Length: 271
Length: 160
Image (cartoon, rainbow over all chains, first blue to last red; front, side, top):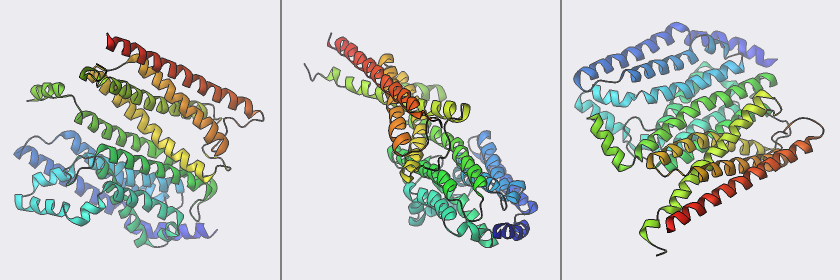
């Protein structure tokens, strides 16, 4: 129907921007920059852990594979591929990248005055506002609700610039949300575990509700059987990322409530 | 004597064991439900056309909660062990209690009222419903008995 015509014109337009070379160069650049900073930081201060560089690399590749390459190519005419892209770009990549502590690395690499500038920026009212767990989850899950239940999904496949904006929003809101729930990098205001757990629960629930809601009322142009497959991928694929997120949050809680006797024991063995 | 400092943390110990056990129980039964009835037997369906909107919301919240409960319950369990306040009987009782409560909720409110999905798509689904809900009631009773027995045991020890 109209949808297939729509998709056809799109995949050609999308090919221009999301062609492999551009995405590949950007990914390589990000990985090289992080690795160089990690190397520099290891030489000047304490050793920067290798696994963080690995996490960053995997995160960048996950994001890159969602916007360039076969998944990105198929996502214009196949809802399941679109959803795989969403999982990679909006959930897995942000998790891996937050976990790799890029802000800490940046602060360690920059000069004192430059890193003071970065800290000032991170403390600005705008950043503090959007990185509140509640704001961040509205931006993240709320954005998805708008994408799938309004005409935005159809518009995204007609206009390239809307598609780029949607992708940028999906990634950054995913990053913001992850960083507002688990604290790896320095945070200006730390919220309690209780608040973060409740917000996380709400966000996960509405993500699952949206996934099943898509079966009954799929976005315009998505056939019913594809909507079901995409929905199941969103529901169960989301579970995997959520489980990692919950485990990290619980682990941080577990570490923070360590009984005092054990705490001194461990600090003794470490130093 | 009743308010002695020594006994102040006693109810807290039981509460912590209960919280860990109930959470893990809810998570465990949700996990078994997903694995056995959705994935292995294919009795349960991912989506049923007659699901109410309230059913979708309830399913979403319980699904999210079950992950949090499983993982959080296990971390709380590790915390009990670390503090040497793990009470085996109370904990297992709470696991059964949590499992039973969730299964009863699932079997009555979610399956019957919100019509998320049926246990099995057959004519005599009533039989399945009865077995499901009676099992849930059984789990609740055995769980409660274990918790109460454990509490009495620890109380009598505490008084000595």
